[in-house]
Image (cartoon, rainbow, N blue to C red; front, side, top):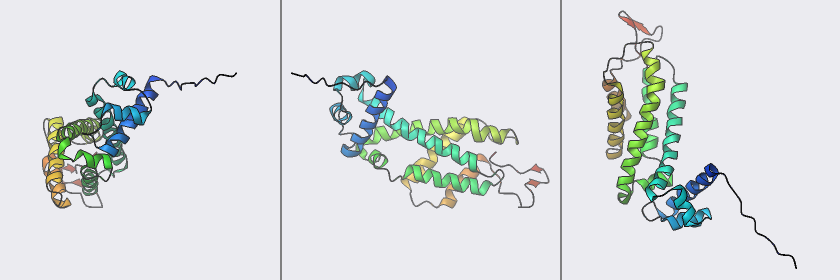
Length: 214
């Protein structure tokens, strides 16, 4: 008589962790973040509860791992904006930033919509804090350094100003979704002390080269 042996698939720790985070994200979409349990995640992942706890000792750790994926995707979006923007074309750059911000604050993704549930208010605030910090970190080594290489930065406490600005814009768009893009763009320009675009024939003024976003 032949005995069949079921072989368990062995994954390396990183792959196993990713599998569990995939399952958590799916469970959050299906059940909502506040109603999802470790047992739900284990069931979707096809693993034991003990294994989930091995990688993520607390449910908050698992929630943060899922949120970090969204934060990382937003940072990639910012990096793409920075790589594609036209140097000296301030109006277009600011407009693109406003569009990008609206996409993040009012997304269509079910997980992000679930974050807006009042039951997830603490999680949503944690997500916003992590996203703002990551975006400011990204801007520090891309846009800000590129700008500083060409012009004198007119603001002091640069990181703190960007942190307040991004937090404020997120709050404004979230609480007043009908606020015009022109108002948001004006806020960005005023806070960062950005001048309007120079004439098309030359990006300079009598006092020197016109400031741009890098």
